[in-house]
Amino acid sequence: MNPAPENNESPEPPRRPSWAGELDALAQTVDGPVLAPGSQGYDAEVAVFNGTVAHHPGVAVGATCVADVVAATRFAHAHGLPVAVLNTGHGPSLGASHDTVLISTRRMSDVVIDAERRTARVQAGVRFGQLVEESTAHGLAPLVGSSPGVGVVGFTLGGGISPTMGRTYGWASDHVTAMDVVTADGEEHRVTPDDEPELFGALLGGKSNFGIVTAMEFALFPVTRLYAGALFFSGDDARAVLEEYRRFTASAPDKMSSGLVFLNLPPLPALPPFLQGKLAVCVRVSHVGPAAEGERLVAPLRACATPLLDTVGEMPYSDFAAISMDPTEPATAVEHFGMLNELTQDTVDALIDAVGPGSGSSLNLVDLRHLGGAYGARPATWNAVGTRDAAYALFSLAFVPPGEDVAAYAAPGAELVARLAPWLSRRAHPGLLAPADATEHRTRAAYDPAVYERLRGLKTAYDPDNRLRVNHNIPPCPDRRHARAVRRR
Picture (cartoon, rainbow, N blue to C red):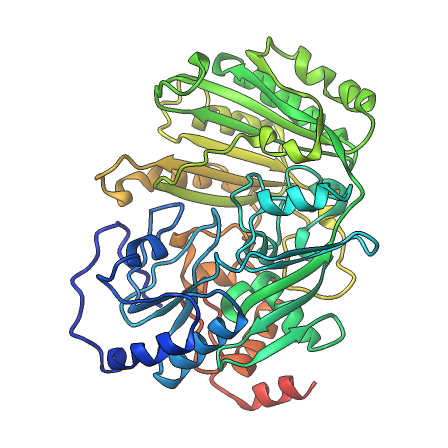
């Protein structure tokens, strides 16, 4: 796989491809827009939240329905082209080049809540802000991402670490009950744990390698309120806060989900004064249960240093965005991920040395999310989401100012990961892969070896020509006899 250049400058377009003359026929078949480079609306259609990698596809198809996805996929299949799906929300994307058919699903935004069964059915373009608004009207809540702008389907296919109820209910992927998917040959499938269970399990963790999910059904939970919010501390108190957070997570019940974040943000006027060009440490908590119990659990964190801002309290589930307070405007930022096996005193020392006061680190954000609890449970039916024994997920981010070289901002995150190597799992996680991880070696690390080989067999069965390769790619097996065996199951 050849990722696009790590900048937003469009490479020189090649000569008009032989299939370009058939785009008018495709446009007659598709209800949504069919846009070639240079046409009005093309740039907006292919835009992403994180501009580290840009898209320059040969054609962008704005799907409004499943039939549009089928038509675009069959067009790609007929002309031997790669086909990719544009990420709906915040997730990292890989650049689609001039020979790619890129499908955007943002117009597919139907949500159906079944209050009696406590389930939701969402189309591929739904984001969590819309889903939470509709589900909470029925007294139900989904396992959400950190922001209303996060795409539901992409988040869930990667596993889904929820800041609100993750340790209580586990990975979002484990609660999926059915999916509608269009495979690389343009065929529609409805997959469940009973109907095509191998494809069902491969999509959950294997993501877009096996097809384009057009709709998903999953469980909702009877939660209407949380004891949640954030505690902000001065960076000078980073060690005291991190040491207390280590003690806090060592005994936290499964009803408590949390994370700790080092924030080193530029002096932007929109930020509170204590965040403008100053190091701060933020502890985010979300307790599913009585507010009094949550307050008792959080008390030691409040007492470890003087908070600069304390937003923790009882809130309706619909206010979940107030926990993480993620930015809502697109930006360019370099990401690095890791999974920590443990948080020891030596780990604390290494983190403080790397990103604490006086470190000189240029990382703008380092996020440590507590796992354990229900994250370690086996799913009721097999899926490809692994690394379930990790204790914490690690995420770092370095913003890239407009016009500057992305590559120049990659080193700090890589250095942090190297500093924490003694405590990092050898396994990555399929939902925590950056654009730089789009190599076979790094993608393979996101799966247990046996699971990876199982996924390769399924890739051979459902996408033998690797049309769905603009992703963290799992290549098909050279021997296609295995594919026939898989599809007969």
